[in-house]
Figure 1 (cartoon, rainbow, N blue to C red):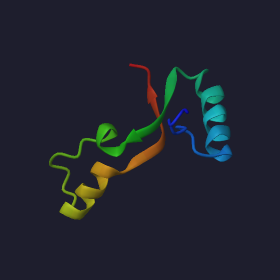
Figure 2 (figure 1 turned 90 degrees about the vertical axis):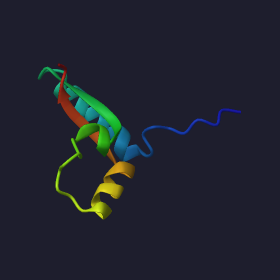
Figure 3 (figure 1 turned 45 degrees about the horizontal axis):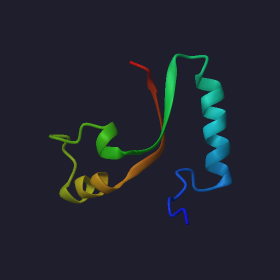
Figure 4 (figure 1 turned 135 degrees about the vertical axis):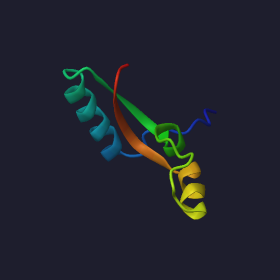
Length: 69
């Protein structure tokens, strides 16, 4: 039995992923899915409250578009 969870949870995420990848393939950027907020933003010394910092460590973005470099 395969117990792995799908990264893209529903048909809207799948459609968004497909559209983003088709669009960005021409722009020299890349699409990443389910990226932790803490891996995308520099939270150290950001000035956010302890509550916001705690949330940022647990939260994720469904999609992040970034340059390939």
